[in-house]
Image 1 (tube, rainbow, N blue to C red):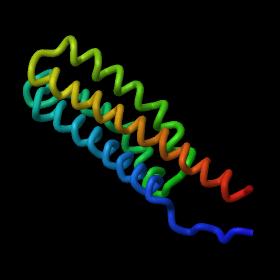
Image 2 (image 1 turned 180 degrees about the vertical axis):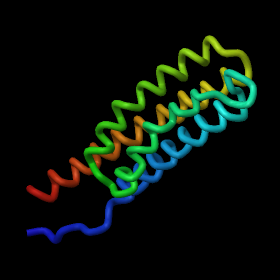
Image 3 (image 1 turned 180 degrees about the horizontal axis):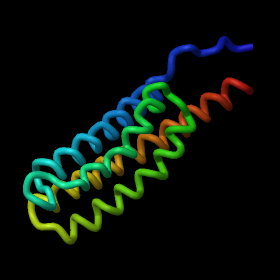
Image 4 (image 1 turned 120 degrees about the vertical axis):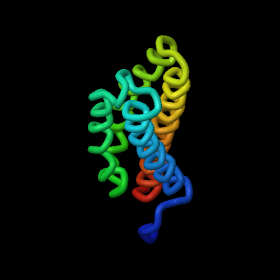
Length: 128
């Protein structure tokens, strides 16, 4: 019988850091974008509330909950779609901010998928 591994592997730990960093980046970008950098109306807009759903999974990612990584990898596509649409329809600097949103969404998705795969692979190896 193999000893139980208490510390996560380097891959699992690094994907967790990328996922949490990307999520925090999306939250900060959404707030800055809609309040200061390129709001729809001068002085900010209520569209800044779009980041509220992104705050919900932050605790789950920090607690390393597998379920959270799975559903965040699905939820992030809503923000990806918004980024793609606004990248083609907004003027500068809004379109550049939208491209940054797309990149953050892609990195969050990739980190979540890799994190889940690495943890499942570790579980299978541990149980066999």
